[in-house]
Figure: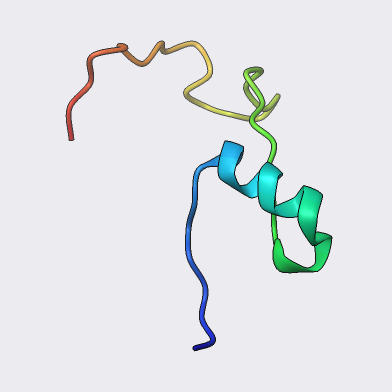
Length: 50
């Protein structure tokens, strides 16, 4: 059936190699904070649990 799935980037890249029309959006991760980010000076701990 039709629908959408969130998949890992590695899987999306493999699917995109076979058929680019199957991947709707592939985000790129940026490490640099935005210039207008009010929390840019605060570091997020690596072990933060939600």
